[in-house]
Each structure stands twice: as C-alpha cells, then as structure tokens.
Length: 121
Image (spheres, rainbow, N blue to C red):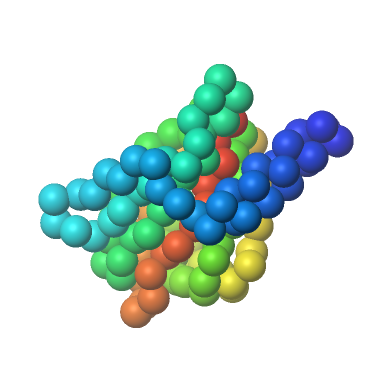
C-alpha cells in the first residue's frame, strides 16, 4: 500500500510539473468533453478530463483502482447500476481513491468538471 501511495503521488507531481501538456486529445463531437491522455504505460493511464456542465458520461466500469484529483470545484450527479443517485459538491483540490466502481456521471451546475485521473491497470 505504501508503494501504491508513493506511485500515485509521484505520478501527480510529474504530471503537474509538466504543466499538463497533452499528448493525445479526444473530444466528443458535441464538444462537451475533452480527455487528454498524459501518460499510458503498463501500470497506469493518466488522463486530464474536462467536462462541461450538462455533460453525461454514460454508465461505465472502472475494473481496477483509480485516483482522481479535482482541479476546480464542481457539482456531480453519480448514478449506480441499480438506479441510485447522489449529488456531490466537490471542492477544489479534492483527491478521491476508488477500488473500482460502475457508475454514470453527470456534471451539474455551471462549472466544468476538471480532473486528473490515474487509472491503474
């Protein structure tokens, strides 16, 4: 666990130190989100995500653990496969760790969702 925390902190520091320079940009046709892959190797995929208010990310599964860092505050509606929903106000600077999850995410309010997402493989 200690090595995992060191890896997470190291990746965050390296990526932030690079000034979030994107290697690959994938944008949806409607322009509601941008995902920039900053690092992709055998251990992790690091992605910077920007999703505008009203964006719905359809139900998807993170099969492995991940860490998300929120650059700015936002309001999200999280929906589970069973239909349960939660609305969360996320503060700037929040770091979230998940062992894996299936969810749908909708950006509420008037602020973008802007995250650095470290997905372990």
